[in-house]
Image (cartoon, rainbow, N blue to C red; front, side, top):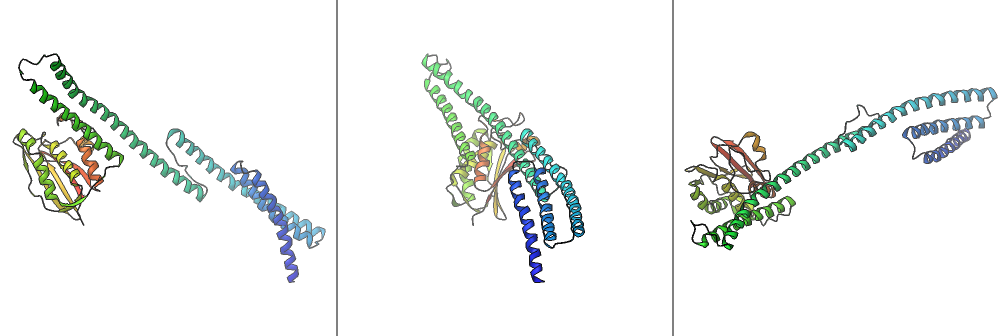
Length: 374
C-alpha cells in the first residue's frame, strides 16, 4: 500500500513537473508580451500540470479503456472550464491595468492623475494609491515652483526699480560736479558729496539685504547661537532705532518685556527686531507710538511690535512676509526693495521659530515666536 502511494505521488510529480518546466520556458519567451497573454499562459500551465499528472497516474495504473476514457473526459472538461474561468478573471486584471496605464499616461502628459474607479487586485490598488499621492506631491511642487518663479520676477522688477532711483541720482550729481554745474541754491559741493554718500549707503544696504536673503533661501545661513536675555536683545534694538523714531516724531515704548532666556544668534536677532521697527516707525503717524513687548508662553517667547499704521488689508496679510512685498496704496511703502520682512521670516525660521502678523485696532502687530533656552 505504501509502495503504491509512493508510485502514484511519483508519477503525478513527474507529469506536473514536466508541464511546469515547459510552462516556465514559455513564460520566459513571453516576458515582453502583454499581461493578458502571460496570465493565460499561467492558467494554461496550471491546468496542464494537473492534467498531465492525472493522466500519467491513470496510465500507470493500467486502467481499462473505459475507465481511462472516463478519467480523460472528466479531466478535459475540468481543464476547459478552469481555463475559461482563469481567462475571464485575467481579463478583468488586464482591464484594470490598462485603465491604470491610461491614468499614468495622463499624469505624464497633462500633469494630473485621475485614479481608476476600481482596481482588480490589491497590488494594483496599492499602486493607484501611490500614484495618487505622487500626483498630489507633484501638484504641490509645481505650485511652489510657480509661486517662487512669480516671487522671483516680482523681486527682479522691484529691485530694478529700487536701484534705478539712487543710480539716477548718483549719475545726475556726479555729472553736475564734473561739469561744474552745481545748483545755485547749493554753493558748497560738499553737500553733493554728502548726498552721494547717502545714496551709496542705500545701495550698500540693499546689496547687503540681497546677500542675506540669498543665504537664507539657499539654507546656508550660519547661526552662532548663545544664551541671552530677550530683554537685552529688545533693548539694543530700541536703542539702535531711537534716532529714526525721533526723526519721524514717533515714540518707542518697551513695556512688558520679560527677561526670558533664549538661545539665539544675537546679531541676527538684532537684525530681526531692527527690521520690524524700521518697518513700523515710518508707517506710524507723527506723535504716534510703536510698542514692543516680549512675553513667555509655555516653552516659547513671543516678541511683538505693534504700530499705528491703520492696519493691513486682509487679503494682503498672507503676503506680508513674501519676498519683495512692499504694501499697498493705503500702506505707503518706504524706500527699499521690500526685503526686510522676508529676511525676518527667514532668520526666525532658521531659529526654529515662527513669524506672524495680524491687525489690531488702529494698526497691526508683528509677532515672532522663538523657543526658550533650556
